Image (cartoon, rainbow, N blue to C red; front, side):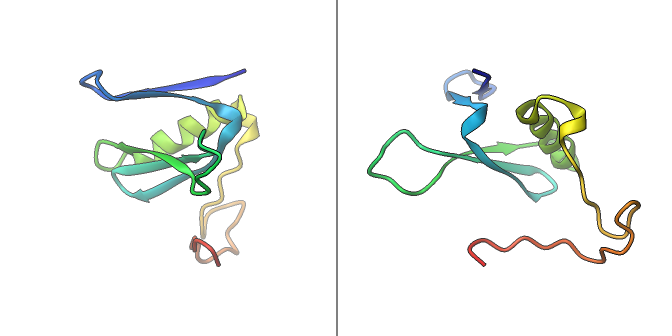
Length: 99
């Protein structure tokens, strides 16, 4: 089983998350990445999350690196960028929760 170990810089807040439980890696702005995963409490239906604050402008790189680790390799992650080959015909990418 592959585990991701998230540790705050102070070392006082950390969690181990099985990679297989991660349901989403979301870039919420240029300095924030939220990782959602199934929680351990069967009475709670909401997903647990880890919110990573990143250096400004680096959230995409952080999310991509995490996705590669979860997918276990660079060739298992397909990145779709609007108006960029090979998806030049995609003009907008917009995520909507619960849509």
